Every structure is written in structure tokens, then in C-alpha cells.
Length: 69
Length: 380
Length: 164
Image (cartoon, rainbow over all chains, first blue to last red; front, side):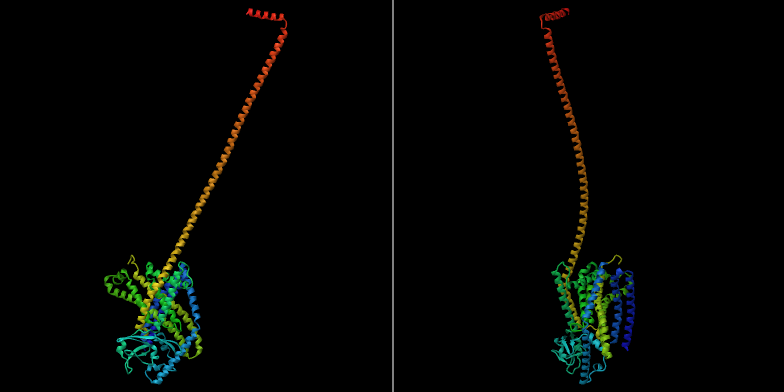
């Protein structure tokens, strides 16, 4: 039972991260389309922001893993 | 602008290189499949043996002949191990080093005979259960107290893989350094021209923007972290012998990296950094809230690094292994092309992730050090 | 759970490996590589700035030579003009001098001619006088051949003198 609840938790964390990274990626695309010459700077900033969001999501997944065991 | 163009060009050529590398090890996937098949049968064998010997504990009996437990297999593969499985029944028996309360113990892991035998050492008798070494008494009962005080510093699969990566790194970079000395002031050539753009990338796109003019002091640290993580990520993706260890996806490895980053950041923290933590620019009655928040911030930064690297690499390995396991779950070879196709795709993606995670780890390390050594602004 | 519990052995070996690697690579790889990269960058920068400087220098030299050329041209023109003037002057001078000389010569010639004429005239006069005297002498001789006539004349002349 705790395993399935942990799985639901991991799923919720992934939804959040998916939305967050999706927004980051979309905005970065907008930015690059508007200013193609700044593409590499936008990419770097995008990767960092995505990593930060992902980090939070991974906390969720790790907690789910902990709860699973 | 010119430099960014240069960077994207280099990134493109890097991706090309990764793709070529990936295709070059396409044939090895058949190996991978075979290996798992063998492993599966081996598991079945051991299960049969344990059935035959006596019905010991229930956990062993669970992966019987008809029931294939994918999650157990995957967890076994991403975990550390005391011997390095090569193919079939061949594996390298790595040395076991134990520090017990009575002194050191050193013997080959082959003596455990894949967990079937107990080994009588100088001080105690040892048994291995799911890669955990335990001290047992005469009747086979576990001596909990002695086991708890024992430290297992064996050369495991991950440690071995790390040593291989170290040797590789040392070979690569000392040879590159010597070619820099030999061809002083000339254009890079051969391997040098593969490595140089990456070093310049670390310097110009990671160190300089985050550390400013103080970048030179931290360059050795950042370069070592970057290449150490990257090469271990890449070695971990290779499915056969010198690779395959899930080192960067092991929490112990990432914990060490994170803790070293934590120390480097805080030891180099200047006055304004510590003032920002302990005497922030807020009304005094906010201190009981602000100071704990700041301290949690300091601790959570390396923690995020640790968990990010661990979870990303482990997730990659789990996905690849799950796709392989599909063949055994569906029990048909017809699913193999689909499985291998997806694994190929995932492996290309994982090569990108291998680079990206090394980059992000280094980038965030540089960012944290940068905030710790930054000169105070006028408004702070 | 097992997967998120760091094992002490791996922590131990990772720390040792990483610190060793940091030390070895820092000493034998990063230091020479970074130094070589910095050196090369600096040398490229120096070469570029030297090239820029050389370009400036070249432009300056070009300018200078242009200026020099212009000056030289001007000087040449001036020299030519002067030479022309000098030539003109010389010609004019020569002409003037020749004129003067010629005039002088003409004058001299004229004077000479006059002298010659005068001399000739004087000669002619002398000749005429001599001839006249000769003639007169002859005439007188003829007239005064006999004694009577001579005495008559003397008498006449004396009479004349007595009268005065």
C-alpha cells in the first residue's frame, strides 16, 4: 500500500516538473525565435532553470523511492 | 556573439561525435540482450539450486522459473557488486577489504561462490547476502553487533570502474598536456583539438561568467569535476566489460562530489557571503526566520547537486534496463527489435544527458562558488 | 532503502580517487594546459594588436609618402618654373647683351667708318692741296720765268707794302 502511495507521489512530482520544464522550454523557444543571435545564452539559462526544476522533482522521486522501501 | 556561434558549432560537432560513437557500439546490444538472457537463466539456476537445497527464505524463492521479477533484476544491476560479471558464468572476482573491530581482512570475493559459501577469515566468518557482507557465527546466525561496527571498503565494481576512469583521465590529459608542451604556441593537433574546445568551453562558458576574474583559481577543480563526472557517465553507458558500472548513479559517489563542492564553496566564502547568511539586511526580528532559511539554503545546494546527478543517471540506467526487460516480460523475441530500437534511442539521449549532467554539475558548482566569492555590490 | 544509502566503502574510495585525481591532474595536466592556452591566446592577441599597429603604421607611412609625393611634385613644379624663368631670363639677358654688343659694334663701326671717311677726306684734302700747290707752283713758275715779270711783281708787292 505504501508503495502505491509513493508511486502516486512520484507521479505528482513528475507532473509538476513536466509542466515547469515545458514552460521553460517553450519560453526559451519564444526567446530564441525573437532573438536568434542570443540562442546560446538562452540555451545555457534554460538548461540551468530546467536543472533546478528537475532537482525539485527528483526530490519527490527520491522520497517516493524511500517510501517504497 | 562570435564565441556563441563557435560554441554551437562545437556542440553540433560534439553531438555528431556522440552519434558516431553510439552507432559504433550498436553491435554490442546483441551482447547486452544475450547477457541478460544468460543472467536470467543464471537467476533461474540459483533459484532452482536454492529450491533444491532446501526452501530457505521466501525472498530467494520468489524469482522462480516462471516468474520474472524485472524490478529486482534492475535494482541488482544498478546496485554495486563485489564481482564483475563478464559473460555467462565468467566474472572477475574483485578483492574484498574489510575493516572489522579486530583488524583488517582481505580475500577474494570468489570465495563466496556467488553467495553460496561462507568464508572463514582471520577474525570472523563472513557471509554475503544481496551484496551485503555480514559476520556470521558458527550456526549461521548473523552477528549484528560486529556487522554494524565493520566497514566494507572492498574494491567493488564501482570502485574498479572509477579506477579505470582515473587511469583513462590521467593518460588522456597528461598526453594532451605533453603535446601542449611539445607544440608550444602552435595550433592544436590530433587529440589535443578534441579536448581543447571542451576545456575552453569549461573556461569561457562555465567558469568566467560565474566566477569573474577569480576564475583561474578554481579552474583545476571545475575541470576535474567536469571530466571525472563526464567520463564516468560515459563509461557507465557502455554495456560490456570496462563499462556498465552505475558509478555516477550511485548515491555514495554523488555524495562525495556534493560534499567536496560544499567544502570548496564554504571555505572560499568571503566576508560578504557569511554576512549575507548570518546578518542579512532585514529587520532584526526577522532573524529567527531568515538565518535558518539561509542555512538550509547553504545545505540544500549541494544536496540538490547530489540528488540530481544520482537520480538522472540512475533513471537513465533504469529506463534502458526496463526496455531490455520487456523482452523477458513478454517472453518473445519478437519484441526485441522494438526494445533494441528504443534502447538505441535512449542511449543516444543518455549520452547527451551524460554530458549535460556533467555540465550542470560543474555549472552549478561554479555558480555556488561564484556567489561565495563575489565582491559585495553597492546596494547590499 | 538500499539504493539511497551511501555505502562507506565507495565514499572512502571516491574521496581518495577524486582528491588524488584533482592533485595529479592539477599538477600534470591543467597547469600546463591552462598556461599553454593562456600563452597562445596572449600571443594571438599580441599578434593581432601588432598587425593592427602595423596597419596603422602603414597607413601613416602611406599618408606621409603621399604628402611627400605632393611636396616633391610641388617642388618639381617650382624648380621647373624657376628653371624656365632662369632660361627666359638668360635668353633675355643674352639677347639684351647681344643687342648692346651689336649696338656697340655698330657704333664702333660707325665711328671707324667716320674716322676712315675723315681720314680719307683729309687725305683727299691734302692731295688736293698738294696738287693745288704744285699746280700753283707750276703756274707761278711759268708766269715768273722772265726777269721783268718778277721785278714787276716785286715792285707791285712793295708798292702795296708802302701803301699800307
